[in-house]
Length: 108
Image (cartoon, rainbow, N blue to C red; front, side, top):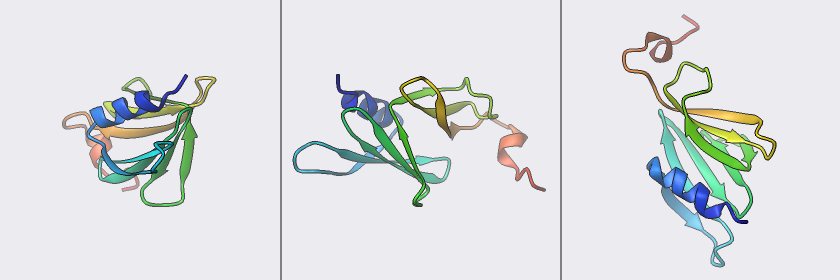
């Protein structure tokens, strides 16, 4: 069963825009601004590649969910998981209003 349309619907629901696709429809690329960091997603039938911040960092996942359950001080995250349900990456997309812990540099 293809997850292609599922990935697409979740990401477009967050405001992602299409930045490319192949001629056969095998893959589609979407771009999304996540709190100032651009994340490019390549969607396939059974997996998704996320390229974070214009770098060579690549996260390959089989599930994309949006929630606030992962305890990283953000109200909502895009959680990328593998087939076993293990969290691979949490990409913050929304801060709590007036939350100093997520708006200040923690190193200072």
